[in-house]
Length: 333
Image 1 (cartoon, rainbow, N blue to C red):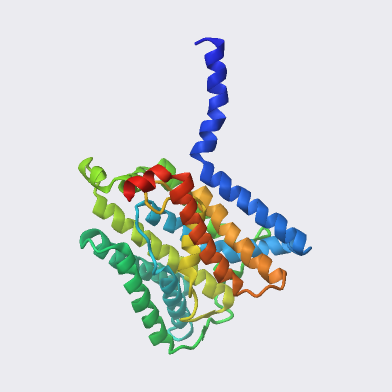
Image 2: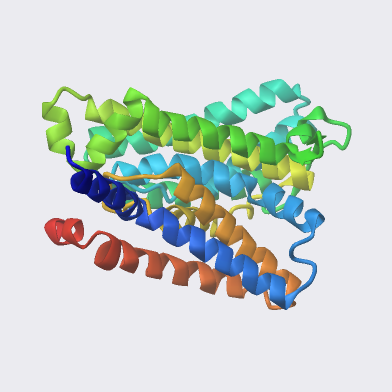
């Protein structure tokens, strides 16, 4: 190898890295832009107290978005996460307040219930061949209806002395417990997606499900497991929110699924499947949390958050299909 070819490789390496991670770079720049804008609008934005609040409140979003990254990487989607969050949160409060169950039993039971909802989704999607959008849309309605039925529309308080509130209100070495749980889930998700066989299977299914099946991957089992993970993540998020607020309600998580999807697609995970990035999802989730927090501190109506979320989804899809990955979108179309 001569000197000129060596220099060409050195110069081309940063370009290849930038091209391969252009989506993550874009969301990183967007995140910084949002931080700069809100720091100029309000002096309270960059305070340590505010950032700890942002991290604590964004933890449930980050937990579910990490699982949703796996779902969307397979080419699927899960619209039922908000309803699952509400049902598990409400039942957790009932179990603690009315049934007197120990908090460890409530935690395990909540995760199990979320897994059951995910397994139902996964069964109809993977084994019955029904589109994920239809299945999870139906589950969204059914699970939300069950949550309304068991609560009768009322908020169910959690006993103030219950150790259950630890997962939502505790601080460890100056860091909120929800944030620590969120970081743990994030790290696990990154390792699974990028360094484990299961993650390679997830990516392969999203890239070419039939090719993955012919190569020996049990695509149905992997797909079902992905939805089980999504259901359990939503359950965990629901219990964290219930523990933090001190009550469970059937109204919790309304519109939450849109925020989760926005965080994932904003983070450059392909809606067509075949590519997912947990780091991008982290930046996407934090960007949405920053927008919500910044609007409140700027005394702008929080209802604009929903407008911003929908706009983010639309722009992210457009960037994903027309700019970042035009060849793949053309091939799919």
